[in-house]
View 1 (cartoon, one colour):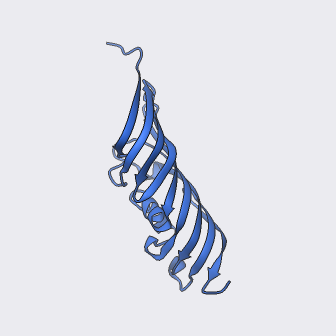
View 2: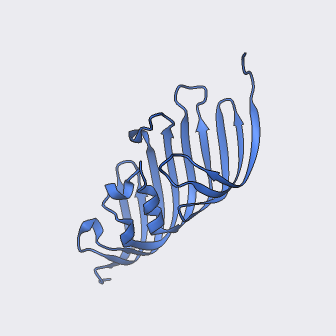
View 3: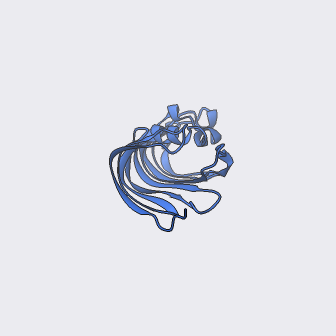
Length: 178
C-alpha cells in the first residue's frame, strides 16, 4: 500500500485547539485549514487563549515526510499584560519567571505578536522551543521589578522576548517620578 496523494480542507467554527498538555487550549477558534501529505496549515481568523483575544494567525504542523514533525504557532493577540505574561510563564516556557517578572504584579493593555516553533517529540523537549514575542503595552504598571522596590506606572512600553533575551523600551513613571 502506497499513499500517493492526500489533500483536504477543513473549516473550523468555535473549535478547541490543544498544542501541548501544559499550555492553555485555544478556544472559540474560527479557522480555515488545508492539508496534504507533507503539512497541515491552519489560518486562524479569531479565537481566545487564556483570556487573550487572538485576532489572526497561523498554525503549521509540517515536515510529515521527515523524522521530526514541527509545530509553528504565529499569532496576533490583544488583552491584559498579566494574562500575556502568565501565558508565556506556563510550563514548559517559564519565560516570565526566567526574566524575574511576576505576572501578579503587572497591569496594562497589550497588543502582541507571538511566534513559537518546536519539534513534536515524545518526550517533549523544552530546550527545542524557539519563541519570539514582540508587544506594545499601554497603561502599564509593573510592581517590584526584579524583586526590588522599583515600580513603574503609566508606562507605554515596547517589549521583545526571545529564547534568551528580554528587551523593554518606553516611558513611564518610576517610583512615582516622571
